[in-house]
Length: 121
Image (tube, rainbow, N blue to C red; front, side, top):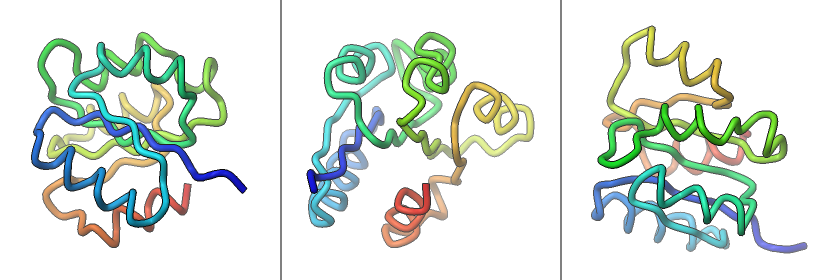
């Protein structure tokens, strides 16, 4: 069985590195992008099983990324976990409508909860 593949889209470098290390210890093949624009060619080339997506990022945020890639139609086998500190109902409804599978609050997600959430997808 091949390694599970995950694309982490996060503009905070320390978090990006922490999440990368976390998933590599669980034998995931990890790809990184600092914003949605940089993530699109990686998504097209690597076709990851999972995406961890931040919402507020420079250049292209998570919502714009989801609007552009039409994840549910274009990549039906890729599951998206939105990990953000935005917790308003409108944002939550918007990301789910745009194809996200799950939404977690970044500030309260422990490493174990993050792994479990991805594996539950």
